[in-house]
Image 1 (spheres, helix red, strand yellow):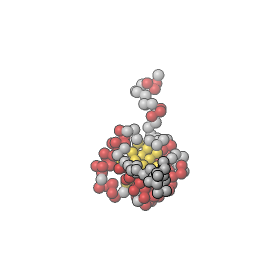
Image 2 (cartoon, one colour):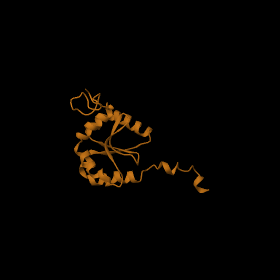
Image 3 (cartoon, one colour):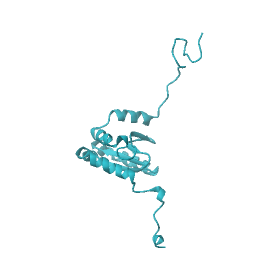
Length: 149
């Protein structure tokens, strides 16, 4: 006799079935989290835990792409560019266009800058996330002559 919720009557819990299928970018993001480069690790150590005043996610899926670091509140994607990015410049332009089309700001930092002074780079990233250059809530800038009325 098989009791409800006991699998095949072998003492296993659950009903078995097929495991959850993940989107390809989620699988890629998980792999990238395990294989972060040294500059990414150094920057993540300084961005995680709200040390900058805002929350960042690492290797975060955004549409069909994975952002190195992502701040949802600031709508900011941070990409650490190393030697691999020089070879994939067309892919980077396509990704940046996708991010910007979807209302995200993209900040590219050089891996060499992170290696040279990770604290300064993290401070710059955090400052941009706290006070983004474009603030959608503030509305568009005034047209010529409107601010004088």
